[in-house]
Image: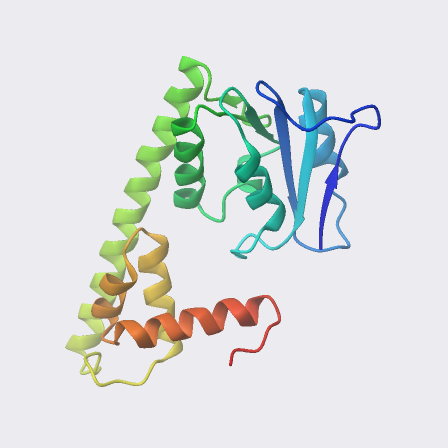
Length: 209
């Protein structure tokens, strides 16, 4: 379920220099009023709202908003975690906006990429995210090494276990490619792709073929 709200007096589409608000709630039972009110107060001409969990990759309203942005526009959110599935996804999205000449504002954290201070804070966040990714990689690699030392068979051919999928997802969330994650846990790249796809479909209630 997705919704888009606009001021009743607005009959035109967004143009250069407009503020676009984005909101996300996890379930239809939750209200997006607070998330919608904050960007509207900040001057948002339109509020795009998705009903999706933080881990869900499909966000139709977010995709539609991003497709329609023009240089000079600004995306405003109530809080950082409304926009990104993870810190790496959030930073990649903001980098993409910046490259297109689009600003970003997170109202709760008071971050505005159109200002020097906002860019500085975002740079610190990026450094912390990279540090976190490195720690995850090190912990995952250390865990695999410990498992091998105990006699666990992690190389090909192997059965895909929940532990291996959890390790692979951790590596991917930390910035590793699917190929790198598959090699690290000892399963083939196509097999990992297949299980990741099946897990994504299951998360949104769709049976995998």
